[in-house]
Amino acid sequence: MLQGMGRTQQDLLSALLYQAAGMSIDELASHLTVTRTAIRQHLAALERDGLILRGETRPTGRRPQQLYQLSPRGRELFPRQYQLLADLLIDEVAAIIGHDKLVQLMRSLGRKLAAGLEQQTVTEERIASHMNDAGYEAEVFFRSTGEPEIVAHNCVFHHLAKAHPEVCELDLALIGALGDGDVEHLECMLRGGQVCRFHLTGKKGQAA
Image: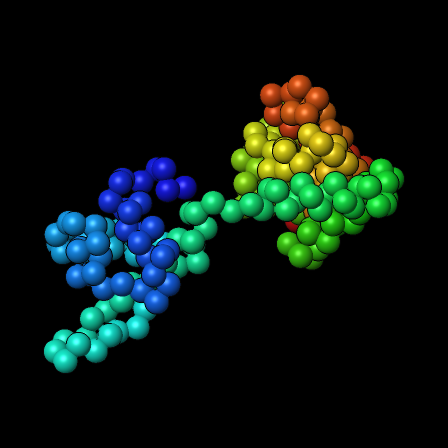
């Protein structure tokens, strides 16, 4: 988010948000009342981080001016209401189809997500890697018996799941489909746990 940046970089990105066609170094320096050198330094850092990109050049009669624009990633730093839309959609779907159908829907989505990630059974370590890509902050711990458990320190659907616990079925179906087995949900943040812990049982195939 913008709050983690310095004031000048925040102002620079905000200026580009209002000028979709892009702005030159001279225009940014004048708008922000800072030196061209400072603008160049900030632009280099923001371009390196993928938050801005170089747009068209503007003819000036002399040397063309390079214009800079917000990248799609840069635009995502500004407020979005994805959570509000997700809340509204889940509320509406739950009201239309009811609890049992919502559970089935979440399980179906979890299996579809797994199918898009892997074409064969994988290990708990590989499952945790996929979960990390989605933001779960997951890792694998081993019991004294040597059996692995997947521990997630972040629930990416926590807000939705608080209102509709059926959403947790997506996680269970995802893990079960990737590991080709049943999943025990041993600890859950929604039920007061510190983490979410999952244990794969009854594996049908040999993990790769």
